[in-house]
Length: 135
Image 1 (cartoon, rainbow, N blue to C red):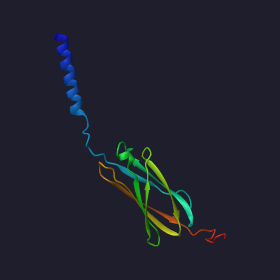
Image 2 (image 1 turned 120 degrees about the horizontal axis):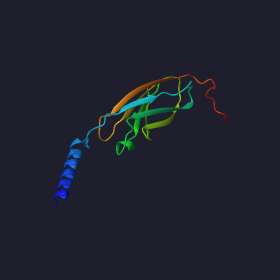
Image 3 (image 1 turned 60 degrees about the vertical axis):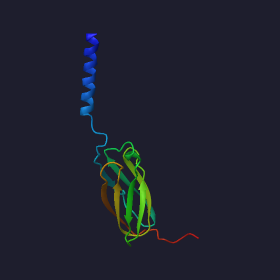
Image 4 (image 1 turned 90 degrees about the horizontal axis):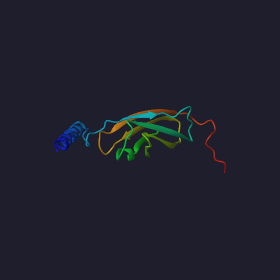
């Protein structure tokens, strides 16, 4: 009986120590967001790919939270895209209609934790192929 009591006491104290040292479930994770600009020369009237990486890789409800990309075009028009994360990374294809500087603001706002935001700018050159249609 004495051995069982000692073993039980050890297990109870070990469990209490584990609970005391465990991270709090509601502790907010601080995320960092990195924008990956398009690679190469981008011409107007084409499609380009924007990429984003969120670290640490979100899990649980945060893992299903998309990154919101707010793009401002050279003429001031704005549009919003969403990119679903897969293992902390995402890509989204978007069309670029005019030459000039595009500015993209990328925001990751998980349900628990502080939102992370970054800004990326990229330049688009006038298309050497023209904009005529083949009709």
